[in-house]
Image (cartoon, rainbow, N blue to C red; front, side):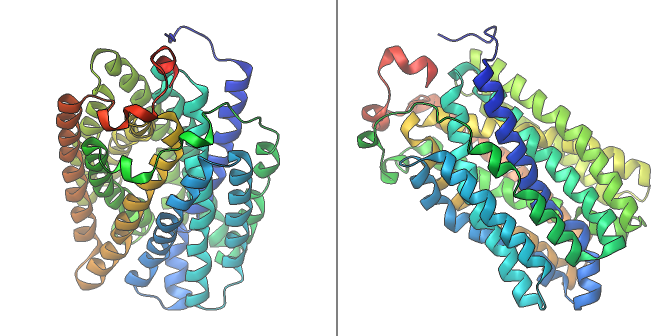
Length: 418
């Protein structure tokens, strides 16, 4: 039985560093468009519904590609799949900079989702396979730090560069920079895993009620989270009297600190509670969004800049508890050989249905105002939090390891490191 007191090995440190770097450039790439929305609205004469579709389109393609990419990652070289994904999404981002119409921009932006779908299930599977069961949430949280730092960097870079050099140049520079980490990942060795003959069919995953409930709850959380991220800077510019540069830098600085603290806190609390309860990590996820909701609502409704920024800081801190524990829970529920597939299925549904969020909020903004659209997003977030208690119910009823998956699990003496 592994213990939290065992220090990280050199391989574990190297693995987390490289995969966190890839997560960094991935979310810098994804987030750079957010501060560019006001520029795109002005220069292309776009509605908020069209602007929202830039994020929704990416998420739909990401969802559709997630299951096949997850299946490939459980069967073939995860290193090669990750490297290929990095190069693909980088080229798609460069193509955004050369788009001469909204249709071409939408296609190029959406294709970024293919590259993202390739790396995420494979990377998270490698991490869970390389760390003991008891440290899984903290390891995934460290991986998520790259995402949060990258998201903040992308927003700040997009706001500063976009205002000076325009949106086309910004996309091209970010796309070229994103290719660099592919060189590092190719030098990583693959962690050991089970034989291909023991790969588990997706149909068996869908027989686990707790897994299905996680997907439903995660869909609501994705809907709300991507909506708030997509429209946050535009909302600050048009409703809180921020300049584009001020909004981009301020929100990026808040994200950098609050989300970094939050993801580490969430991973630590999740692993601690998991020692006492098999559903301890799920409790952390549910509590996080219930704590975050009132602060996000306060940020939406206040007229004071300092209250807006403070409330977003606190809300973002709690929302970021989610990122490490959610992957750990999905891997807790499934055998090792299905780790990438479980992430692929989860991403397929949550990203596909959650993709409705940014575009729906944009349409609400066109019909009424953006403030109402973001309030709807918060309400959906609370619904997702409450659905996590349904997951807890099924784990208490069936156990963390559902009997229908028993034939695909490791032998008992290996279970501690699964």
